[in-house]
Length: 298
Image 1 (cartoon, helix red, strand yellow):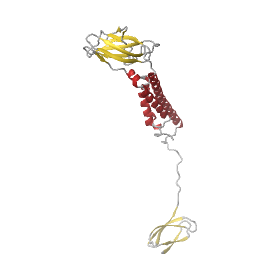
Image 2: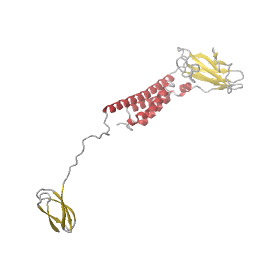
Image 3: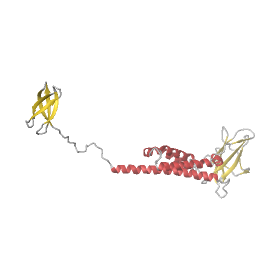
């Protein structure tokens, strides 16, 4: 243990430092008079150099950098408003499609065989074989002859009220073609794409005849199949869709929102309108994906 004397470079007061076995190095010692911290360089138990150590407080710039992006409160408010708009819109689409499905399922469940109080609807009957249209055919509805008008290209026009029907098509050298179908309540002269063509399965039905004797059965139209076995499924799909619209509105689960939108499509509300709304909602869902919590709120 060695004691070495040194002079404070600030106040020139004589001080001492005791080394615990070291003979060289850089040491610190506070002056007993001015209390300044002194750095002491020692080599071979001799003072080589002394300096006052000053603690310089760093001054931090309070100036905001020019490239710093300013926080836009208005932008945040606009973004929140936009998100709310899409959440409400998509939820409404899923809900509307599901409610349409609910109405369709109920109407099919209680649908009568014939809507006697409804107006007659223009029905397009397309008659053809594997090679060409058939220009001369006879149409029998529920074992009764009906007035028919031929407009060319195998297209025959008849008028029927909404309801269930058994239609037979007779043509020379061809088998009798039989189809059980259901004409849903609709606007007279319904057409979506081509005014003169109608909508297949709704007010337009195609009969494919085969050459030979006897008869063949055509596939039932979609509405008749729905009428026979779909109402419970449609009601179930609609309820899932309604639940999905609530999940979407409350932003509980993105996956469940997708499930709800999918089943709103499957509910087949008003045949085309409901599925179309459901498809649009399913396409728009990714716009609000980041808003979902990803789990059910407790």
